[in-house]
Amino acid sequence: MSLNNFSVVFAGENFPISSIKTSDFVFRHRPLIETVRLPVLLQAAAGAASIDVLNERFVASISAPDKVDVQISGIQDLARTFLEYVGKRTISATGHNLQFALDGIDSPREKISAHFVQGTAVREALGTENFTTDLQFGFDGQNGSRVRLAIVTEGTELPTVDFNFNFDAAKVPPEEALDHFKSSYLQAQNIVDTLTNAIQQEVSV
Image: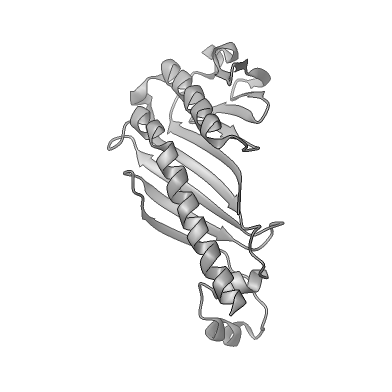
C-alpha cells in the first residue's frame, strides 16, 4: 500500500484569478513558479507541490508524497494563503483528496473484486469467470466530513483506493476543515490497511 497523491480543494465562486500573485505562495521555503496564467486558469508549482486556481475551484496538491507530515503542513499553508485572497465566506466546501495504490496485495484484480461482491451471482449474470469491479461507498467521516471512497480495479496500472473527504462550509468553516487534513489522512490510511489485510487473508486461505 502506498500513497500516490493528495490534495486540498476549495469550491466556491468568483475566485480572483487575475489578482493572485504566485510569489505569495511558498512550499517548504520554496516560492511557487507560475507555469500557466490565463483569464480562466492559474497554475504554479515547486517540486511535487502545485496549485491550480479556476473561477470556482482551488487545488493545492502533492504529486509525489515523501515526508507526508511535512507535505501536509505545506499544502495547508498554500491553502491558507489562498484564503487571504478570497475570504472564508467565499468558500462553499472544502475537500481532502487522497489516492492509495494497492501495490502490497499479492492478488489478481478479480480477487479484490470478489472480496466485495457475490461472485457466484455476478458470474452467472455476466456469463464469465473473470471480471473486475469498480466500487464506491459513502459514509460519515470521523471529523465532520462526508466521505466518498472509490475502489478502482479497471483501467489503472495498479488497483487504487480514492478518498474524498468533503466538508460543507456552512457546518465546518474552511480554516477548521484545513486543520482536519491529518485526521482524514489517518482515517484513510487505517481503512486501506484494514482492507489490504482482509484481502490478503482471503487470498492466502
